[in-house]
Image 1 (cartoon, chains in turn brown, purple):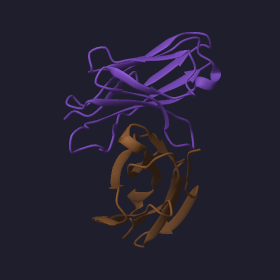
Image 2 (cartoon, one colour; image 1 turned 30 degrees about the vertical axis):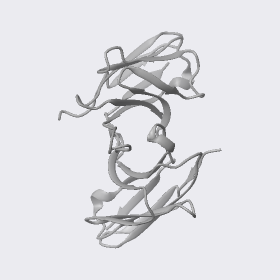
Image 3 (cartoon, rainbow over the protein chains, first blue to last red; image 1 turned 90 degrees about the vertical axis):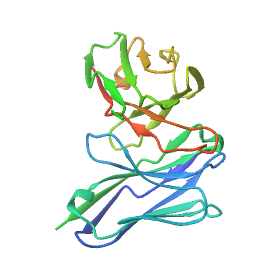
Image 4 (cartoon, each protein chain N blue to C red; image 1 turned 120 degrees about the horizontal axis):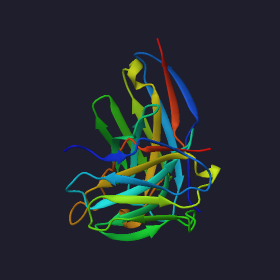
Length: 110
Length: 117
């Protein structure tokens, strides 16, 4: 079967660092995406990992371990505007179909 | 790049009616996806097109759902004989893939929110 697990909710403080974990079991693997989705808005692309290791992009970093079926999204210097849902999504072999997790709702408090 | 646009933004209809949604992808994108999203869940894959060809359709999609992309540009998603369980946000996304770009992030539209009375 295909399954993506991520925590339902997380709370963190402005200025802090938060790590959102994602584990997956999918039929084939051709990359893992992280998207941000504010309430009532469309998902927007944050990061993409296809090889093991860390990808850094400004305040956001994403890590992948294919052997463990595991990824995390690291958000540094949290801002109030980072309050949103963070979606972990896995692309299957050929990149044809993308399976999304249910998302992690992040609340950033002052 | 004007982004992915979807129409209408909201649709309210009675159970049993047919509805049709339209998606205009980013013009140079060759892949177009349809998803359904309910509150507290991630987008659920429905179907996708490579140019005008519909290459995969979710097994979750009943025969009441049909999608087209006749000229490889805009796409329509039709739901026949709507049921209350069809109430959801319907998202369209597009991407440009091929050659040395086998897997690219998807750009999403703002969605069509469907409410079945």
